[in-house]
Length: 411
Image (cartoon, rainbow, N blue to C red; front, side, top):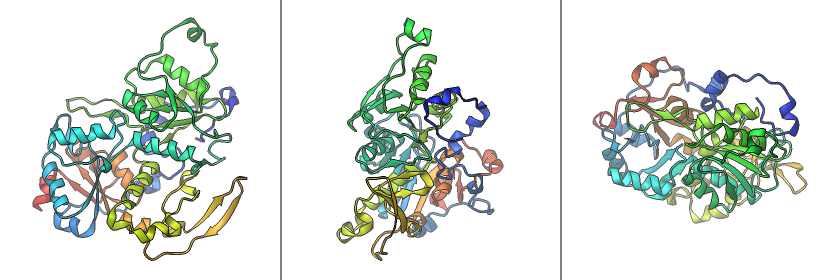
């Protein structure tokens, strides 16, 4: 499926099944290889039990999913608090990465602290935060959507229709864009029920978890998305969310799926397992004192440039790996010029960082796939939504698998 925003899309006939969209959280709709079946398993070796001493030796950056991995509802999971403390005492870098856009980063910090974790806000990465960063960089001119993804992207994103919760709206408003449509249902009136009302004048439709989702809200989002120069952005596509009880609840994927099927348009997705979240995470890692000295700030790779990331069909300011040392730079006339960057031995290479990253999570299709898609080793924790039987049957294989954190510490 291609991401299409032309005004005549509503006249085209395309068969879209709910089953096809059900795997959206495993499929990268921006063509950055997320969900590529060739990448569902790093190797044919079965996952092994992680040994704490071995992890300390091989990894510096420890990345944790939150809900279902470190805690469930209002309770920290077995050994999680101690595990984080042990890592900190040994000088390891820790990041908390969540697809949950219904919390502000500070909300995640406060929840973690209330459960006994030691967390600071700069360590928290959420899908809403990543999406907000995208908006800022887009409006600065550091991101240009490739014409193969959308033929007429907006020059700037000034106004957005949002299907989401208040916390997401608050984050988006901090970027300087005008938002409307959330939270809460739209009032029913004659113009909506007639179906003749004009689409909203917006530059983007932003969709996340929406507890006020109605048929009308989906209709409104659809009408906006099929107009020219409108981006369809999604926080994440998790089909369900754990709230600590016996049953899970419908997640953001329900909202995103409804809008995507109705508009026949694929969104840019900012949560795990997609590349946008990894790119943001790398930016945060490079800010750490031991990974970025003052000398490196003046190097070619750390200066602000507009570059083309082939894997995600966008031009974006990012640190580069050795494989990206040759890239296309776009000038003001949207013409491309091939540029070779000099190699600076002091620069931290993305590929080197990946080897020192370890992702912990309880979901195969988001957390573990996030590691696989972005070249990171991963640990599947069996305290959340995935049990040993599901892990055995899945084609998505982590490097390590553990019942809980105590098991890792005691090995």
